[in-house]
Image 1 (cartoon, one colour):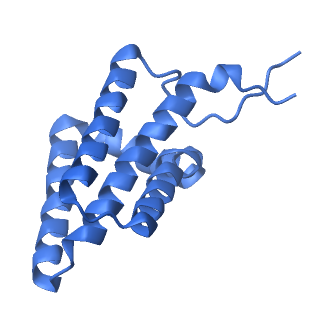
Image 2 (image 1 turned 90 degrees about the horizontal axis):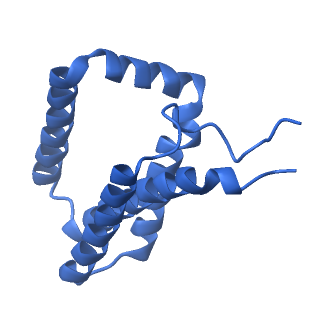
Image 3 (image 1 turned 60 degrees about the vertical axis):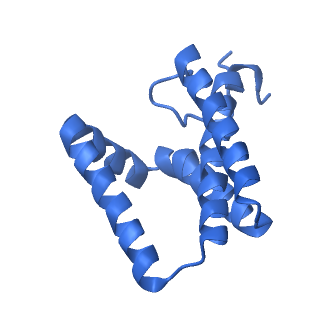
Length: 132
């Protein structure tokens, strides 16, 4: 009898110990960052959490997500670094030009970090989450 699990969100399989430790550090960083900021916007944390968790989980497993992931892996390390740096520069420029308040943006970003970490931890435990 074939076992059915929560999903097939990770093409690489179960996260390694290094990935789990990295995710734990990301969670600690996000919590410390929110604590240091002082202004926590729970709605924006929730929106960031759901958006990033969906993007790295079920959306990444969709056909469109698979094509984007294949393209991103196909451009190599240098191409990924350029794409990430370009995206970060575009966000930084947009925030400074549009004068976006920092509190909601920081909450959204940290919610996103927590959402990605939740997917990593879910993937690590998915073998024990069987659907009968």
